Length: 102
Length: 211
Image 1 (cartoon, rainbow over the protein chains, first blue to last red):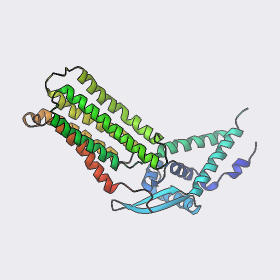
Image 2: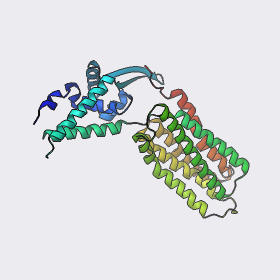
Image 3: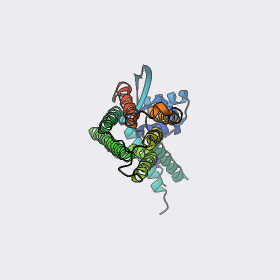
Image 4: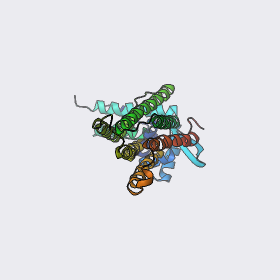
């Protein structure tokens, strides 16, 4: 078995919580902090930590604005994050293909 | 083992992506347009004195088709403008969610209209269909609300409450409420609610690409 795809997996994305955040953001132009929290059933602290990690890696951008006079935090994937996510999917598919019985 | 793990990961990603694809087309123009169609239809119907049950039911079913077509055309225009597919998974899910309640309401109207002759005078039926359609439409909106911004579910509750209040009103306030034209009630409930919600959304709906 070729171990190379495993070694190429991005550790930032690979973590379960962050992969879930990236998956949600990949399917939507942007999601609010509340939408992410509700969809993933994460605590505020946990979600903040993961988003910060993704932000530091340049995969997620965070925008702060106001909606109906209430602060609104929205997250979206950056082009770099979208590319990293696509590569991660490709690697997972490669692993599935290479382990498929012939 | 590794293959299973990777496949499970891919499946989780797919599920999350499907769940995340919330419908995000601007609803303000759609709601305002449907509202204007509803109000105009009520005024025109009232002026034309469509007083038989059959004409009332057929007229409002035709209006609903016009309103739905107009809404879909507006959604399609937005999708084309954003260089996105019109028949996207979120659009498909919303149509699927609304379809059963809308179909039952529509078929109920078709069945009743087909059972009446064109010369039959007005009965209680026209008036009864106002809360019935309001309830079914409320249920359709509430179902769609699970794939749309949260406000739609509340909007659906508006129709459900209107339908319930009207049902109780018809039973309790016979003398007063039965004197109101069902045409005008349809205009107020369907046209008025949509128009008011559309105006509300113009001021509150988040604009794209802020920040």
